[in-house]
Length: 136
Image (cartoon, rainbow, N blue to C red; front, side):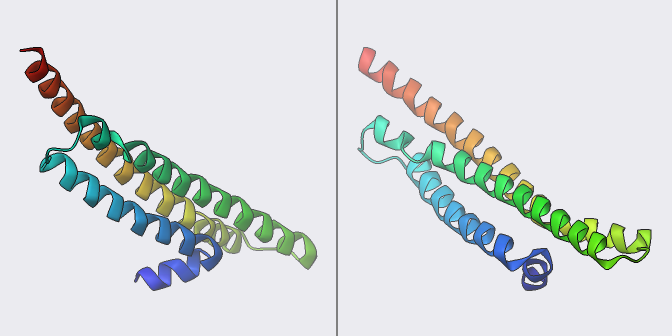
C-alpha cells in the first residue's frame, strides 16, 4: 500500500519525505527514551534534538506542498499542450493525485509536532524538577 502511494504521489517527492519520516521516527524514539529514562546526563543535553523534530516535520510538509505545486504545473502544461477539450473528471483526478504528497507531508508534520509538544512538556517537567532540587 505504501509503495503504491509513493509511486502515485511521485517518487521524486514521496521518497525523500518517507526517508525524512524514518529519520524523524528514529529521533523521536531516541529522545523519548532519553526523556522518559533520564540518566545522570545534564538537563541541557536532553533538549538537544527537540527543535529538529519540529523542523523535520515542517520540512516534510513544505516538500509535499512543493510536490503538489509541481504536479499541478505539469498537469496544466499537458492540458494546454494537448489542444483538446479536457474532461472535468480528468482534471479532478489529476488534482486528487497531486494532493498525495501534501497530505502525506501534512500527516507527518502533525505527528511530529504532537511528539515535539509532548517531549517538550516532558523536558520542561525535568527542568523544573532539576531547578527545584538544586535550589534546596
